[in-house]
Every structure is written in structure tokens, then in C-alpha cells.
Length: 209
Ligand code: URA
Image (cartoon, rainbow, N blue to C red; front, side):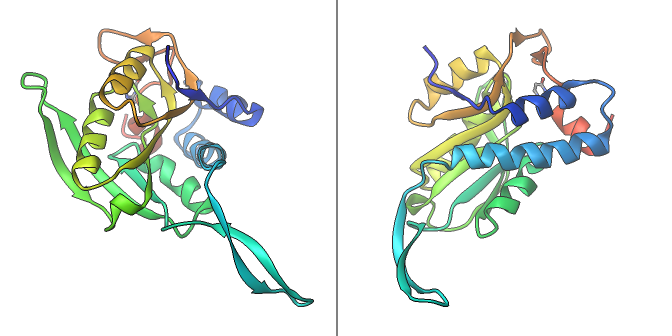
């Protein structure tokens, strides 16, 4: 039984439907992705711990709530993950950003890293790994492998669409990393695309097809 959280907010579902439509333009898709990622970010961070600090309002001193701990890390799985970053950074401008370029070799199943840049002290931060599509789960699993190798211990995975196959694979590999998604679709086709899906997320964000 999957523990994935489906973010069923009506605005998320409405925007996702427009993004799925094949005639939605590149500009429209990108704008919607920015809007929807803000809403997804709101949900994935809703249980963050708070502490208090003493502040001075124009009237009095008070104990006011503030986020506890070190700055968050948003880890983008290249290249489509970058499409989710902008909206998330609109909401949490102080977040640090990691970029992970990784794929799994089909024959050896070894995770091949072609790019990795992250802030320090990953072990002390919440890392939210982002990729619009959780399809086979191979690249997401590999990216989380790499972040854990660099010290990350507290991770969440955020996507727009997930396939049941990808959720199963990911949860098997990383049972400690909760998945958040706007929808769980029917299945993967033979080419590894999510059905009904929205096509190739990278191509739709960047207009490369
Ligand atoms: N990656 C995509 O961009 N789309 C899919 O449907 C599956 C993987």
C-alpha cells in the first residue's frame, strides 16, 4: 500500500488538467507549472517545525513564530526539475538549491552522475527533491542515492504526476522518503511515458519538441 500523498487542492487539479491538454502552449505550460509548484510547495511544507523569536512590532515586543532549523534545500533533478524550482523559490526565497544530473545505466543499473552541485550541511537540512514526473523512478531513486551519499538524511520527494510503477520502485528503494504528487496516473507505456500523463515534461517546459 503506497504512502504517497496526493495533493488534491481544487486549484492544483484544475491547473493540472490545463497542463495535460496537448494544445496548451509552451508559455502557458510554463506559467501554470510555476503557479502549481507554488501550491505544491505550500502543501509539502505544511508541517515544518516552528520555533519562536522575540520581535518588536510598532506597538510592543512579542514572541513570534519562525521556521526552525537550517534553510531548506530544493534539489532539482535535471532538467525538468528546474521547471518546479521557480514557483517554489517564489514561496521560499531563502531556500538553497541543489542540482542533480543523474541517470541509471540500463545494463548495469548503476547510477551515473553527470552533474552534482549542492549546498553544504545537507545532513542538517530538509531536502525536497523535485522532478515533475515520477515514471519508472530510476532517475529519482538515483538522485536520492546521490543526495544521501552527500549526507542528506531528511528528504521528501515532490512531483506533479506519478505512475504506480514509479511509486512502487521508489518506495522500495527509499522507504524513508515520502512522496507528494498532484496525481497518480494509470500506468507507464512501453516507452516509459506516464499514461494519460502530459507528455515529455522537459519538452513541454522548454519547447524542445
Ligand atoms: N518523463 C516525462 O517527461 N514524461 C513521462 O510521461 C515520463 C517521464
